[in-house]
Length: 180
Image 1 (cartoon, rainbow, N blue to C red):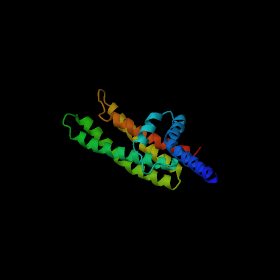
Image 2 (cartoon, helix red, strand yellow):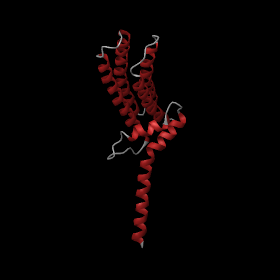
Image 3 (cartoon, rainbow, N blue to C red):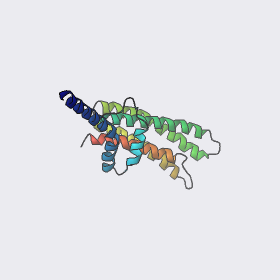
Image 4 (tube, rainbow, N blue to C red):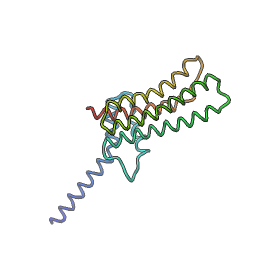
């Protein structure tokens, strides 16, 4: 009887632990999206769930911050590679190519800024991490806006800029949850 009761309690404990871990992403994204109107709950959940290791899932909000910053860095690196391809496209105007070169420099700098944000976060300097992530977030806005400076010009990076913006918002929202 005692063994059965112990076994049942142990299984309940394991179930509770595993259900908490599996709910971490949806719960964290829900709380973050409730506090930040720029954050899409569905985008948050799908971005994180698509990029977590099934063998080593996140167990706390701190893990999600690191994961979200890493996802953003990877996305930024992919955007840089895409810009390099676009710069070789002969159909773009000189103005578009100049904008793309600026975007390249912005994104290159943002990767370094995201590294700084990660260092600040790991050392529990949430204020600096917040500032660095905000600066990285501005990359996508600045990149997109410069194409609008010339009438009729269309950014070939609109979709990428929107995704990068949202990924930064996730990291920012999670860091701000540490201040609540």
